[in-house]
Image (tube, helix red, strand yellow):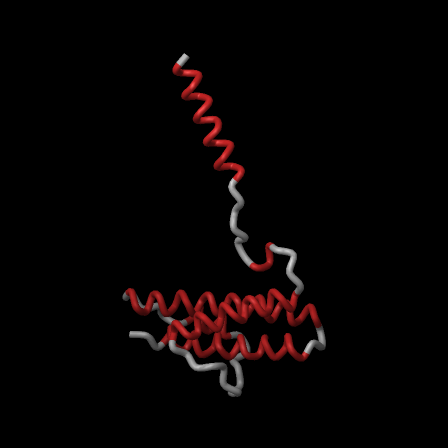
Amino acid sequence: MKLWACAAIIAAVAIACAAQPRPASSPASSAESPHDEIQALSNEIDGERTQLGVSNASPMSTPTNPVAVAASCPRPDNDRCSQTCTLSDSICGNAKRICQLADQLGNDSWANGKCDDAQQTCADATKRCCECT
């Protein structure tokens, strides 16, 4: 009789765990508009930029592919630099997605401006990662 009770409790716990809502893995997994997703990604970049201590995107020219630059620089082997490079990678990933969405929207000046800002922030963050010691 006790074995059945244990089995019932285990089954109930398994069902309860399976029924728990799972958090969305990214803004793209929800039914957001492209503008909403761009804004959410831009907000993430702003938070990560603050953590890195990188100023707002400057109006300088952006490298053609800051993600490729990030992949080519040597990665330092200390905790501070590892965190810096992780934040840089996240910023560049968000920038890439923002620009993909902006491309889909075509001549949307707001989205294109967010893409330009995100790419500049990616370039600045990549420089911070590559120069970290």
